[in-house]
Structure formats: C-alpha cells, structure tokens
Length: 376
Image (cartoon, rainbow, N blue to C red; front, side, top):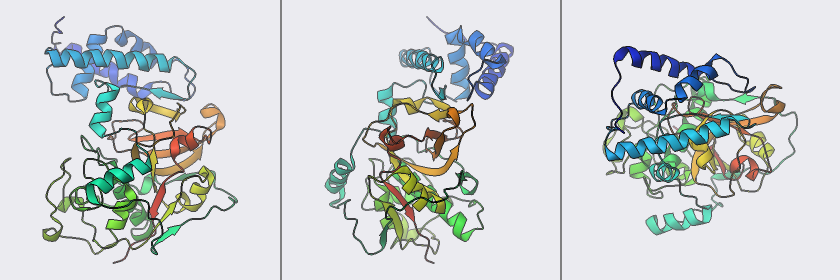
C-alpha cells in the first residue's frame, strides 16, 4: 500500500513525539513514564513511525519504490525485535537508529562484520599483504604480565579526553578508527593537558597507506600501531576520510612530527581485571569484540546479551564503572566507544556488563592494545 505524504503540521507533532520517545524512554529501572505512553500511541501506526524515522535519519530513498517497501519491511521486523526485547527483564534497551531499515546480513555487509578469529584474520591479511599478524616478540612491543589487582578505582572514564565519535560508514575500517581514537586519547592525556584534540588523526592515512592492513576489507590495530613506528601521523584536516581505499598520499601531505615508537598489549586469556589494571588505568585501549546482531539496535543501559567467542569488530575501551542499585543490580560495566556514529547507542558508546562468563565481557580482555606514548 502506498504511503502518502504528511502535511507539515502533522509531521511536526509526530517528530516532537518521536523525539520525546527517544530522549525520555525507560533506562535502568524500566518503569513506565509519559514517554512510553507516547511511544505506544505512535507505534500503533508503524507507517507513520517509519516516515518520521525516515526523515530524522535523512534517508534519501523513496519509500514507495519496491526497494523502499523492502526497507519498510525490514524496519517492521526490527521494530518487533526491539519491542519484544524491551518487554523483557534485560538490563539494556534497544531502540531505532540509522541501521533500523537493514537486515542483520545487510549490517554485517555494511560494516564488514563477518565473524572471524585472529588466526583467520591473520591468514586473510597474509594473503593480501604477505605479512604475519602473530609475531608478538618485537623489541618495541611490551607484553603486560598479569598481576594482582590492588585498590582498583571504582570508576575510570576517559570519554572527556576523546574526540567526538565518528562513523566508519560503508567501509570495514573499524581497525583504523580504533587505532586513531586510542592515539587521540593517549595524546590528549600525555601531550595536551587531558584536553581533547581539536582534530582527528587521519583514518584515511591508515586505510590508504598502511601496507599491512586491508583498507576497507578489514585489518588489525596491532599492525596499524606498527605502521606508526616509522610513519608520522597526519591530521584529518589534511587527509580526509572517504570510506574507500585510494592511492596513498603520504609523501605529498603535510604531517605532524609524531610517531609511535612503542605500544603495549595483552595476550588473550587474561581477565578483565588485569586489562583494566594494566592498560585502562593509563588511557583508552583498542580491543576486539563480538559485535553481534544484538549490538545493532542497542540504545542504552548495560548490555547483557550473549556474545560468541569469536571477534568481528575493533572498538575502544574508554571506561569502567559500577552502576547504581537500580541499574544492572549495582554491577560493574565497561564503556566502549564504537565507530557507528553518535546516533548509535549512548552517543556512540555502549556499556557492556562486566561478565567473565559471557566470553569475558564480549571478548574485551582478549586482544587489548595501547600505545605507550609518542616520539617527536
């Protein structure tokens, strides 16, 4: 059935209600409030909700075409999953975002989220670049040994030193965004008085020029840290992101004076406590996770859905905390910075429930890397 256009006054009212739904919805206690009533009224007409969402998300397609109608069907299916989840006793909410008109398979394709083990990724990149990912014995890499955690702080939050969350768009460059965000955070802490940088380090430099990674076909942040041992960092303003691999312009682009001579890592199998004590206490940390389909519609709260043992996505660990009694039953959580835009999750972040039994909190502790500083 064709979805007709709305007049401006009707659309304004719908957008107002829609905004209230997103901003006032239940979080930790899951108690009903006026926003739930508004959402119920709006959700009773899925087409109206879809049209409002379509406008808010700046979707450019015509939803009356066959392709647009399929997008609407995807939206309805995702909305059903969201509503069913939010009716459960989970410690987090799902909600609508820019991915809500995609199937899980389409999201996987969009962000290159095919599940892969480090060994498989190593082989994939060897095939692309004739390299090995698994040589962890270089003199300028420091393996942090497990130690007893003593007097662990109740909270660490590095979000205040980070640049704004970005969107990798349709390119499997999460590895480059994770590397860049860690470098930006550590730079702010060590070189900028704990104030965020005013520009990003260029992710496109890594996508185009790192010979040991796969551009938009995936990569490994260990290799990109290695790249910056001998190559100077370039700012985003001088080498802008294009969401596709292009010709390397390193030699012709203005550079900073900084390189990254050393970085630290944790081999897989250590506990979340040890990762926290050895790395997170010093600054943001690049980690790899299982960003499964439960992540796609994450909106707020403490993620507690099952995670697989494999990894498919590079993100940044930026915090650790303990929730109030009504949130997560007073439990501990990690704060993760994603690269799916600030429109996703909690302004681009997800809080993952601290749970060693859930693949060590979605594998956060298995592949943790952080640069030790800068030269130059």
